[in-house]
Image (tube, rainbow, N blue to C red):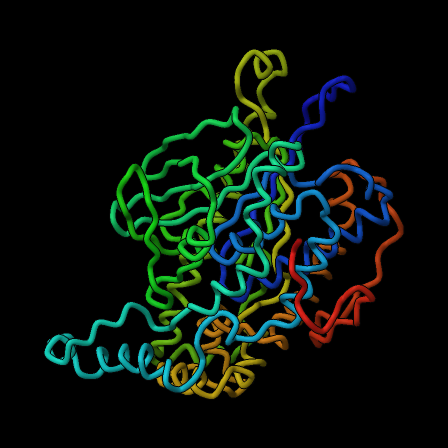
Length: 434
């Protein structure tokens, strides 16, 4: 936490929210946000402005971030709508799951693996991705009314929304942001910011998991570039939030930082890894490792700054950043293994071909499934875990926001069983943001 002396006349520091990537793992973030909303209400801070005037997101976290930003004038209602969507989600709302679609995309990829590129070229097979995420566009139309952003920024409910994507064309990592007029773009090695109206195409680009979902074309400097998942080549995930003016940042991760070691039998390490294990390992590197490293970096800088005398620190532009990190306390791979059987049959068959097993005791290939399992049993368990993890840190949350710390909140479900208790304001169908 920031150890600088407080000035009661100074304005409260701007708070930023960073939602990381991770496909279906992003359901965990929504459980955390629901807990934050409930803690805020219990603390009597409901009448205060939007707790996150700066919101940044990557990959599926960009979708949640954009939805939250579009409802910045009513934080509690917006969180409830996010909860409703993720509570009722099905894989077919994110990507095509019917057998014909699997033949058009997934089977073509399997042909490339089995017949080789030479035969594939002869047969003119040019699949763009393993899966077709066209349905996600319809979900974004319901969940993310981006046309609201300019008015929300103008009225002061929101300072900035930023989403990140990685350019296959230039190799650069770009942060696209829409925000207050005084905010300026920044440039660093291999990464830079671009002020631009955020569209659903930006969200599709940011969430285009490499190989799994197709790249998305976006205009940059009057040219078209093709972008993939923003977690790729993202060397400093927290930096964008700080560049946009945040002095305290809440980070919601999707794994690795607090997770225990895998529960599966250590003797299985002697077997050769399946394609699913290798793919899951690669995706974990893309989605999880950079954030863990950046959190350590910020904490190390804060520690270094705390050793500098206050007078010298105040005479410089250096400031420490209050950092609150909430990340899964259980392994999401292990949770995914219990729900692989809920995937649609065609998807299950496709993933089974690379080593993802529906056997709940076999978690070796579950890491890959953990990013693609957009089914309510899995997302419900992740949301329950997110809620539980956030409420366990209730004291830290209240200190971070300068809220009164109320009596501990009861859990809304079991993080062990993943069966959320019915929330009085949850409904059976997703709600549109208005």
